[in-house]
Length: 569
Image 1 (cartoon, helix red, strand yellow):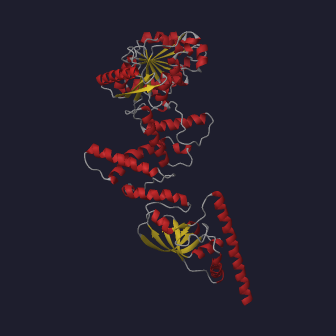
Image 2: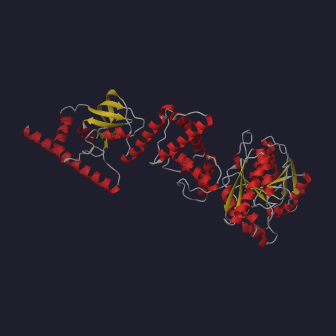
Image 3: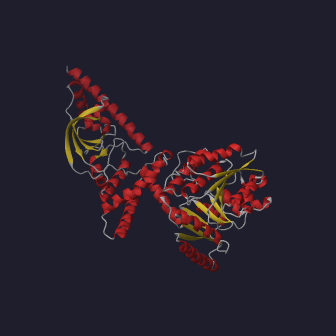
C-alpha cells in the first residue's frame, strides 16, 4: 500500500513539475511580448480603485477564469495560476491528492471587485482546480464595493487608467449624480482634460447665475449640456464604426480638442457638430477613395455635407448658420459684406469676415484697422453678429481653408473668368468655385433676394441646388421658378419632371420653364423674364482644365449675369 501511495505521490509531483514548466513558458512569453502574466495584487487594486465597504455574499460557485489576483501571494503564481516556486511542490501535491482521492478540498475564500475575484485563502486549490480542467470552484465571497467596474480580462497597465477614473469619480461625484454613466477612457491623461472642462463650466455657470456652484453640480451640468450632446452627434454619425479601438469618451475628447485647435487657428467659435461633420466627411472621402477604413481621429478631409438629407419641414432648420465673407477693403469689395448681411438677417447667421494682407508691415496694419472699423460699423448697423479676422496669405487658398468651418461663402464678383483659355485658368474666382467645399454666393451687385430662379439640369450639383432652392421657398417664403434648358448631352424633357416631383413632395409651388438653345443664354433669358434677383445653380461638372477647354455655362453666367448667383458644389 505504501508503495502504491509513493507511486501516486510521485505522479502528482510530476504533474507539479509539468505545471512549473508551463509557468516558465508563460513567463518567457510575457517577457518577449511585454504583456504581463502576473496575478494582480488585491491590496494595490483595492487602493487604486478606492474600494469602499464590503458585504458577505456567502458560499457560491465562482468561475475560475474570473480569479485574477491574490491577497499577498500574487508573485507565487502566473495569471493562469501555474506555480512559480519550487518550494510549493509538496503543498501543491497534497492539495491535488485531496482533490482526487479524498473527496475534494474545502471552499476557498475570495474578495470580489466588480466581476473579478482575489484569493484570500486557497491559492493552491485554485491552481490545482485549473490544472484539473474545472470551470468553477466553491468560494466564500466577500464583495467589496468600487466606483470603477473591473472585468476578468483587465491588464495591469489598464489599472492605471481605472485608478485615475476612480479619482475622477471621487472628484466629480458623477457616478452618484448620474448613475450608470461610463466615462472610462482607453488612454491615460484624459481625465485631467475632463476635469479642466468641468472646472471651466463651473466658472461659466457661476458667472451666468451669479452664485457659487458646487463641483458636483457643475459636473452634472457639464455631463448633460456638453458631454451628452457631443456623444449624440458621435452616435448619429456612427463615428465609432470608423475608429476601431476607440470608445465614445475617446471620440468626445478628440472632438473637444479638435474644436479648440480649430477655434485657435481660425479665430472664431465652431461647434462640435461642425467638427464631427468634418471627421465624418473625411472618413467618407477615404472610403470612396479606397483608403483604409480604420483611421485615427484627426485624419479627416473636408467635403460638403449631404444636403439631400436636409429636413425641410423642420422649423428649426437653418441652412446657413455661419457665413464666410472675404473683405478686400476696396470700395467695391464691400458689396459681398452688404449681400452677406442680407442673408444673415434672414437666417440669423453669424458672419465671419476675414481680410487678407500681403505682409505684417505698418501700412498693412493700418489698412487692416480701417477695414476692421468699417466691418464693425456695417454689422452693427444691420444688427448682425460679425467677427473679422486678419490673416497673411493667398486669398483663394485662405478662403477654401476657412470655408470648411462655415456653411456659405459670399464673395464679390469683381473679376469673373475671361473668355479665352488663359483668362479662364488664371481666374481666381473660378479657382475658388472649383476648390471651395461650400456653396459660393457670387455677388456682382447687392440684391434684396426676393425672387429666386433655379437652373436645373438633373446633375448631382443641380440636385443640391434644388434642395437649397426648396429650402428658400419653403422656409423663407421666397417665390421660385425653375428653368431647364433642353439639350441632348445633358438635360431632357423628363429632367424638369424630377424637379417638379421633388418640390411637390415638399408642398412647394414653383413656375417651371423649358428652354431650348445654348444653356447660358436660356438661363439668362429666364432670369430676365422672371425678374429674378437670385440665381441658384450647380457648379462646374468637370476638372478645371476640361471646363476651360470645352467651355462652361458657369463661366458665361459669371461673366454676364447681373444678379447674385448661388453656386452649389
